[in-house]
Length: 88
Figure 1 (cartoon, rainbow, N blue to C red):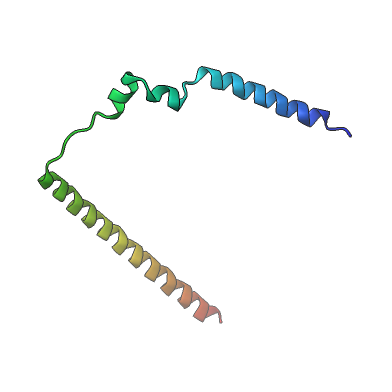
Figure 2 (figure 1 turned 120 degrees about the horizontal axis):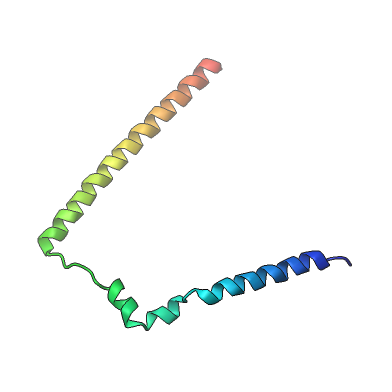
């Protein structure tokens, strides 16, 4: 059974990965750090009026995207059926 080369390649890859992992900071180690937490939880406060405006703006954007998708799908199927009718 000659599989020494492939096994050695896997061992080398694992060693290289473990060497790289040693330099990185792990997520769970950073979680207890106050420096990390202060950066992650510094959010701006929004008033209820601002939240309503944001929701309405998102709804309008979603309607535009949905409308464009419907138009694209209709044009695509129209062209598809048109080409099929011409060919057959």
